[in-house]
Image (cartoon, rainbow, N blue to C red; front, side):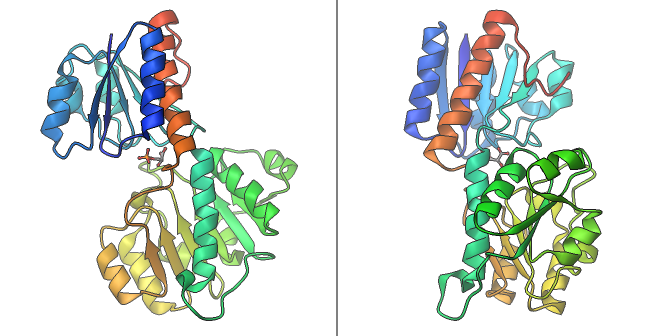
Length: 306
Ligand code: 3PG
């Protein structure tokens, strides 16, 4: 079978080698399409692919239509808002992600961002320590849990909000379950976002929530750009010059935010949460193994479109 690895943001070389090794051992061939700049390149490359591994690359209905032999798509990572699951289902294509495989990298970046903003973006001046400060984690999944664990190690007081996770689980981890999202925003010095982009979360981080944060509050986004209501974020930053926003997923209006609020706002040049050798290796190899298992045994663990 032909496995296409299509990544605008390529995996580290060692991860690519690992993918090739797993595929080779199982009698499959790997074809690489890295750093492509135009959708047409992907459309051409998928024409004879039996399997597809992507990162944040968009697997739209158009891509699916251009891939008549495609049987499985694996998003090497957690968020699958880039995959048209319906289009996959219509064609009987199995879509999977690799949950947890790059979570540590993202969690480490979230903590690094908190410290970076607390130390005035590493510019001279009096900063603030994160020890003893309150951190609110929005969504207590794979990344949220790791952020909680690390933050506790740094002496932070951690609470979390997640309607899908029982309060007992949080309490077991030494994390306080928040009574409501509003209550959490109202008392936390830092809020770290770990929600996916879904119809119910898109645009949900709005003025009403962010403006509840106490003086000097810092909102950390290593999740998705789409969850922020950008116009309302801009309004909070204007009304509350003490509020900070640090993000790994630049806003559409990021240039404007950077210009207007240089001390309050920081965005990475390119999404880098999962950009570690370890995360690339974990997610890439997991994707390759999941594809081989599916072809060998029909295993559909981690299938998203059941
Ligand atoms: C994910 O959903 O796994 C992360 O956002 C990482 O995305 P990336 O593979 O595009 O870096």
